[in-house]
Image 1 (cartoon, rainbow, N blue to C red):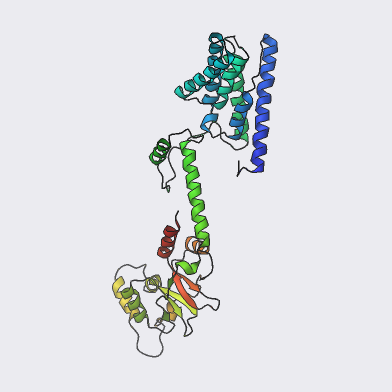
Image 2: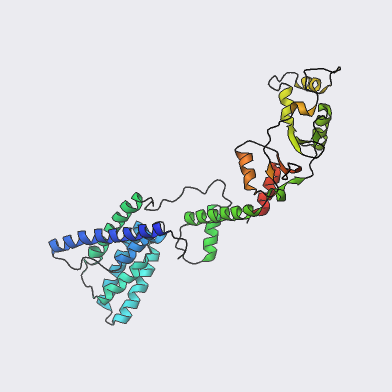
Length: 356
């Protein structure tokens, strides 16, 4: 098996050893006191592998462990008493135990081994399914609950109430896929959904990791120069239906950026009454050479602009959009010459294209 961390391997192995030791010590003490034998069955070791290594598996939950093992032992005892040939008896016992476990929704692989063991050992006591099989299984489940909980593996496995809100899959989708598959899966519906979500997220990350800002930018954006009158800049924003203008010099080196929000802020957006008139007054040029009122783009533009390079990963854009609050990110070359601009819409289109 691949993808299992060494720490998890040690956690599982130590847990299985502790679980078998716990069940063995208690059952041996009880057997010595009561004079019963046997007190531990070998398939409990296989149950321990499931409980401690695969605590989220449907086959390792308390009901399958206890009921699957005990019912299989009962089947083995009954078949051993009625079928003389051990080969035929073993085959019949395993098959019947499986059918019974399917019927009662307690399928547990070691149950098949317990049914066969009962036949080969010629177990005839009706006590056998209860002691040692059920008691061994119950003690193992108790140890699994304690050990898995202490080591951060919820047991019994808790079923999620609903799929993640952002999931593209619903529970009915997963159910339909399982039904179409038509075979037993050692993975519950909710775990399967979580696995699919993780795989999809990894695929997005892998694909987006190869995308560069230059791949998603809008090239050759409309720009303004430092001395462009505010009225002209506003006209361009409105006619082009854009929300920002990068401000560049004659060599297209980025100086800043001006947005509709900059116009609104200087027109005193907080006072909503007469906003349109105040905006017109703000855009109207004042006569004379000297005035305190902003007249050109350079007077209102933002100079502290977050930028990215053409060869930078798209991941760098996510930080600017999500954490820095930017809505328009200029893309520049090594000399800070403007190459393009990226908006959230550009990024969304890139994510959709990159989707698995």
